[in-house]
Image: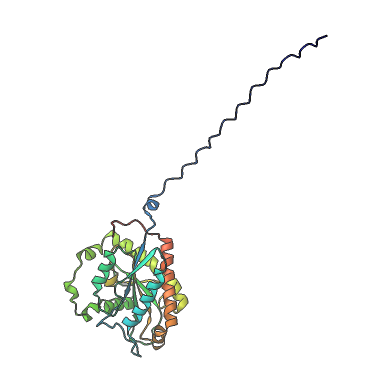
Length: 277
């Protein structure tokens, strides 16, 4: 007998593929602050200013060492040290033995929109036992000490040595800015910069004063550029004069100054420029 055919079972429909899951959109980052919006990755410009030069020797030590020669040597080494950083460029107010008026040193810094201005000197005093490094910022009012006032008067007289009539050279913008908000901010930043430099200097040698002093130095009057004047040591002190002539000691000073400058920029990233260079 014929066998009854088995009933056909309908094939199950294929399982449709699972729908692709769309990843959730990443959360939007918080909007940058106004300060962060202004910050950009750009070349940082530092102007180094070796004091005196040419017919102006600056202070002269007991052994005949001239301030202008020592500070030029230190500044050139510091230039090379800082220029090793690809994001930093150093410009000099002088790179040889020639005279530059004080107001022209300030103009150079402002013309290139410098981020920092560092004037390098070697101190001198009537008493040979005076010793130690000092850092100065501008003062809108009186000097922080009688010694600071005396030193500012001596440094400001450099133009007279170069045959320049200071009274005839008036940068009206700078004079006017002495009383405006930009100069107040400049002094505040300059004091912070000075503290960053004082720390490393104090590990190289003795400090004459542990705080940043202030006086009316003409070369620090760029209203929009944080500016300090560093007295590396007392060239009028026989022991410190010999140190200033020592290449190893100069190298230590250079490293201390470079460290302070790097620390300043680490805490104060550069802002966008107001105009293109």
